[in-house]
Length: 342
Figure 1 (tube, rainbow, N blue to C red):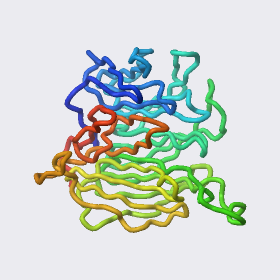
Figure 2 (figure 1 turned 30 degrees about the vertical axis):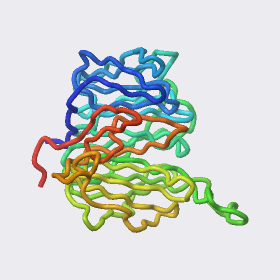
Figure 3 (figure 1 turned 60 degrees about the vertical axis):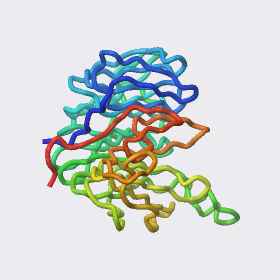
Figure 4 (figure 1 turned 180 degrees about the vertical axis):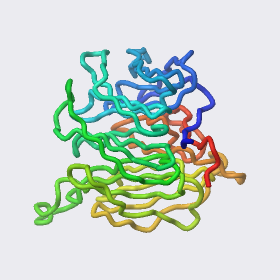
């Protein structure tokens, strides 16, 4: 048994950075994920037919298809910076594939890995830390797997990868999100600038079937992970289904958000030295976009969006409830267990 993400209610897309574009996914089956690359020039989609499709955001033209999965593809992640030529995909049977662009509109498999249970989420780390892919495992052991390539250069044929893993959530990992690499030196002045580290410590936030939301930290090589905090907040309860992190613009800190199947949403502040501040908000997500009284819908998905410099769709609703964003329509996307969680 595995913790699996749920299918959305439709398999067509109307989304894009600026301006809005329509992407035809007729015949693709259920849509599970959609991700823009770091330049917002291409959109990759994951669907139940096991095919990854890549579209141009200029006119919505399909650029290609990536075939290699035997079961529904449930998560995607683009590389960034020096690793922008890479795209990772994962499927319900635990298959993870890293695709490398060898020439415009042509990709080949750079590396493949199989994890136990569903590979619920894949996410590349910020490129400042090097090249690493985190994989959220849906098996009962709740393993987070790290696929790491040490050298900080563009990927090429025959790249050697290291695999590390650690148990995170008994019953399955539902979601994970990397912390931004912003250093405390962002706001430092005078002598403090010279003493500050170039990068913040590498951190990851996860949530899972054990109802926990945890912050993890590693060394510079991303090999040894240890738990820093288990996050709690008054009024925040239930089975977490997604977590998201993003920079607190203008301040040397980042925000951590989590949402549960029961509709609770909480936001914490973590400073760049690792300390966790008070929870800023917790409670039930609104039943409608207007916040009218009613049963709280599940907070299936969360994502950050920094506008207008880098418009981006993560394939997850930025609002914590099922309501859509009016500024940039996005695909519906959710996770839920296919079994009752204890």
